[in-house]
Length: 464
Image (cartoon, rainbow, N blue to C red):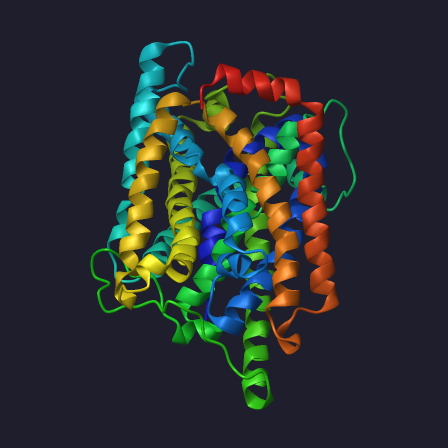
């Protein structure tokens, strides 16, 4: 009965929490953490709404998008563009830095060709290794769940020990209070960084749609009669229907479905939301305690500066442990991102493409793994062109905000045009979705307007 909230909590403690959260709090303290609170709260509305659709008809919300008028002619090119932020393998690039740092004994220096090449080759290796858990294990969901539970135990365990014993009460108060200091904006703040920070708090972008897919694969609601995506090895008996299945929204069926709604509410508000806040708070405490006031952070430096500062004060063992913690945060999230991209588009192809409807239910894995293979080729090309993890992270965050904002508005459209009246979300959910859309579209529009010259320079300087 513990489901996508746990898996996604593990996946969502990633680049934002380890890279942008500490970078922002080291410079501005807890003053901007209310953006994380706002972002996570709005995403809860989004997550509940898309899982409501899945519980009703056993399909992912991504398929629901394509069922609305005017159909694939509009939605296909739109969502390919909106999903661009997910295509950048920034997590493999970022995770390569702490691995290289442990090998070299210091943070890789951008100006040295040998060290830059080392980071690039490690990023290639990590990126390729991230595919392995998705290939074996029967049902892909089960493999992901095992990876993320292990990550949560190890990462939160280490960060909690450091925060309790090595971080001052002043720092703890500053960071925790920042989550409720709504509207505070420090002077000289970088809106591009804050926009990316908002994108990575919680899930962000179209990665939130994975809640819908995972609820189905977990077997919640009508997902129990639709099936799941099997792994390449060991999943031959697992099947996925080419169409969703629904129920008559009356009597005991409707009561039972409402019971599932209460369950996803607990999964979001008791498990996922608090886990995201904790996952943001703990790394931020470390950065504010040990690298407070840092400025001018460039390239690889952002990934390992907290580890270096802790080691200088408390011993070299914390250099290794903190860098290893960074790898455990970033690498499993890359696995989740690979799955999320392939899963979204597999569902669309499996239900919408006539050419694959002749395939049996267990053969959905052919579509899933063909997409994974395509992404593997693209990911290696992207890593070879731009190994700078900070650049990839910020650019990815701005793109993710647009995807999140527009898709939130589309979820409202899906609810009001596809779901029966009895299954639609209450007005509070729909207001929350509209607020989610305005928040993410607004903050990205502000960044694009104020920093267009800088963004153009980035794109010219890094041949993505």
